[in-house]
Image (cartoon, rainbow, N blue to C red; front, side):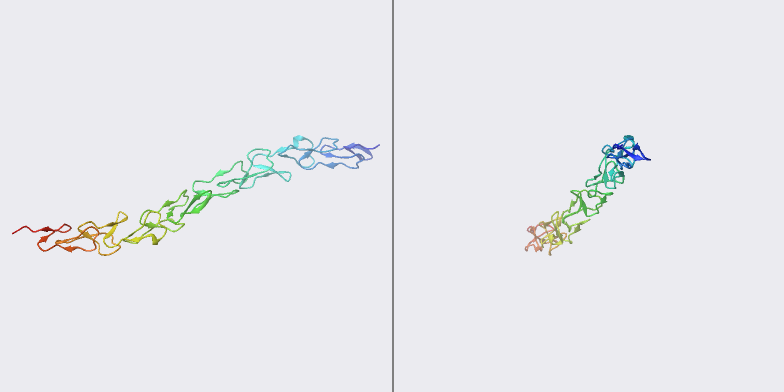
Length: 263
């Protein structure tokens, strides 16, 4: 008698394969064990696969042996495997873990990714976030140095600030540098060459070069203030020196000349 598929000659008689085993063809002399992620009842000619996203050990005897992989894991090489750091699976029965997107992170066995804190960033698949240092800010998911003429004074900045008037900075600056005394620059200046010395007859007032008013002067460039003309002297606006009052006239300090009255 030919032993049918699902059985084998054991001890001289045809015997059904035990649960968890199979024989695919008639006249088998032995039964084979079902592989991982499959199962069989007694007398099986083939093993049945576990449902997608579940797994079972070799020699499993029923579908009850198939275990669903929990969220945070996936079936790899036939076994439930925790998702690696920087990856996640949000639901049970996953067949793969997904990579965390940029500006997020995860630890091992994660069911979701955690956003980076404000002012920090990470590339896709990260297990932690990097704080952007002073002199940089988060731009399009990366720490980017501040452009010349800008700065960020502290780490974790989300934007760079423009240098004010009379200041300048190179790229990646954590602070702006003051122009030399008596010189000025517009906001957002990028180097010391942007600082212009105020010419004679003017001085830096409220961050800009301003002409000295009538009755005052500055004799040299880079002045930080205008000087008042002395008594019996006068000057027009923007003067580099004071002029003596004409004979027969006089002035108090900083004033126009007036003609002395008769007598």
